[in-house]
Image 1 (cartoon, rainbow, N blue to C red):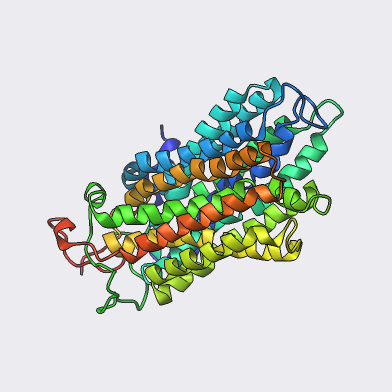
Image 2 (image 1 turned 90 degrees about the vertical axis):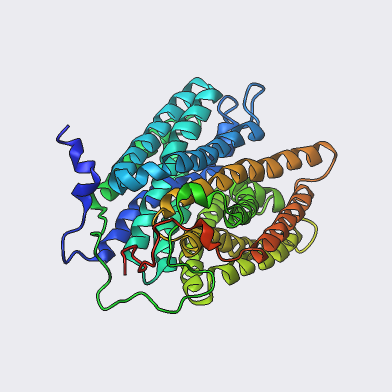
Length: 462
């Protein structure tokens, strides 16, 4: 169709003189929308009161059941990114972003029908599966594009591409709370109509990114810039094919690093609103908890830009050492800020914000880490397959938090104390990631593409 031909990759090639600084807003339009998934915890309590309205009724869903909606969305994010990453390299970011917008918006519409009919499987299918495919395609679409536009600062580029995803809850959380309050009646908590309105709004917003995105010409490079002659030890000027990359130990070491970092962070993020209310009972209500979710989103977003940019100066490996070592210490400390210990809301919020900045920073730094090790030629496809670590963590993190919490509550532990064991487990996982990061070495030349010759950082031949 002529109309849809606008989505073809060749129609999105930038004309001479096009400013690369027009590309980051297109990436942000997509990532600020799909980053709404990080505010899903504001729906958890309302979704458990669809029948009871003011409190859970006998036929209402448990929080552990509702948590699977979020987990499914993250699973599908990783799986769809892995499945469609190579297609994206040929189809181009505009077409992938268009499909992402349609799937993400449709997921909300299906979730609306699930909420109003009280059919949990529709929420799983809509928000989790269909919306999750939109998440995966939208997440990886701008990454390789911005790396090609900013070969001189790959960490900065991936930070700009991915920071919007971390900031999505900063918009999604207050928007959802206000919409649910607007649509709430004595017989309806307002979740269904909120899903419907948010789906329409996000679809329109994401289309801005679809129309704005551009890819550089094959011979393009930044003005007055040349690829550095001397590179850091882990940085290669050669390319590795996506299938070959999966045969290297480096791919699996980075998979472990990403998985444990995400598992730890996502366990807090998915449970953020109920957690702060449990730890500070009577001090923090739903509205303040929603504000806390939004604040975490701000640090999640800012951390993606700050840490990925920092990695351009100190290197990806040292940056991950900070995430994993400092993170482990803070996870041990976090539960001691509430309950019968320090009972300090400010300290709890401060620690959680630092942890979420490093959680977001891990996401933004990993594409540049991959580019350092495997070259820029297949970075989207390799990144997509690595995101299966996120799929695993999307199940592991919430299950650890929710199931461990319910198990301990069932055995007489108070709500505040129920989180302590979980946080210690998270710290242990980060220690495993620290060891994996120690083992990362440069990729053996035997894995390079047979015809791979040194390239400049934009992917063009010297």
